[in-house]
Image (cartoon, rainbow, N blue to C red; front, side, top):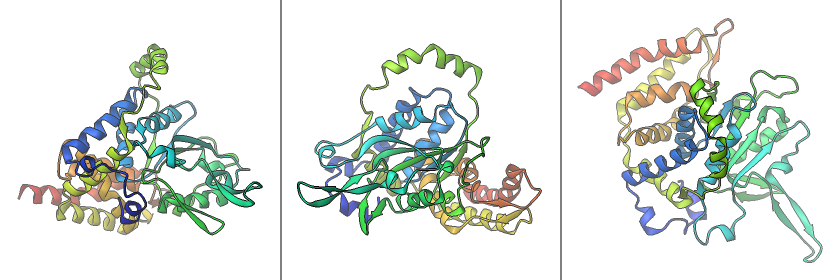
Amino acid sequence: MDRQLAEQQPDSDTPEESQLNLAGAIDVLARLRDAVSSQVLGRDDVIELVVIALAAGGHVLLEDFPGSGKTTLAKALGEAIGDDEGHAENRVIAPFRRIQFTPDLLPSDVTGVPVFDSASNAFHFRHGPIFAHVVLADEINRTSPKVQAAMLEAMGERQVTVDNVTHPLDALFFVIATQNPLDLVGTYPLPVPQLDRFLFKINMQHIDRSAELEVLDTWRSRRDSAHGGPALRRSELLASRAAIDREVEIAAAVKAALVDVSRNLRADERVLQGNSTRSLVLMLPALQAAAALRGRNFVSADDIELLLPRVLGHRIELAPGVADLNRVFHDNMREPMERLAASTLA
């Protein structure tokens, strides 16, 4: 959590939680993962990536199809995080909100708008649906570039500016955006700056047969248990972020491997535009969170292999005629990862 956010919320953590160790942080993330997994079946890999992104302070773009469980996932994630005592009544932050993006949506429909109060003869800011722990931006590519631009400040700076007044969002502000890859009629493709605000882009596939049967068999029990109360408090998750940042080590060889892969990609003739240095900076806390979820206090090559394609896949533009992104990644990762393995053995 950065200094500005800490100054905005000085009393958000109890003394015990502010000193949460790595074991406690791992327990917090595991409880969050389990709470979401109990409501969303057959999506363990997606849930893990979403939890990693939340722990790293990033956002996620899901490329999916209707009825794939994205709303259930986002709602389960938001409802698993409860407010702290004395925190909820002084704020307008909801656990979860869903925004259906349409061509006629206005920026004020997302961020909020000043409303005139005749009793006090003054304007008061009415907070929009973006003020939530978890925001589902459904079909984000169906809205105009003007509304997409309004999301840039919120996702990048965790604040919105309306009528020259800046309103801070919560430190846990987390966006799960969706877009349908098959339905392109009436859409506005996300520009590169907007795509760069997402830590991960995840392509969701249909769940397997056994998981689909389990969804049908357990739909009633999962519906009835959907409002069982939060699995953890907001301050616990913020404290776990701090513990992971403090205690999970990123070796110099790991950073060298990330830079070398990026330089290889930029020099590859199959790549029209490579990734930015900012993408590597955003990847570091995600690697730490991935290591923590696996019970380690150090980032390993396995974490890089898991996350690097997810982080860079939507930031790289391939040359015309090149379609196999996985092959491009494999070829450019091979030598840097071999050097990382050799340095680890040494």
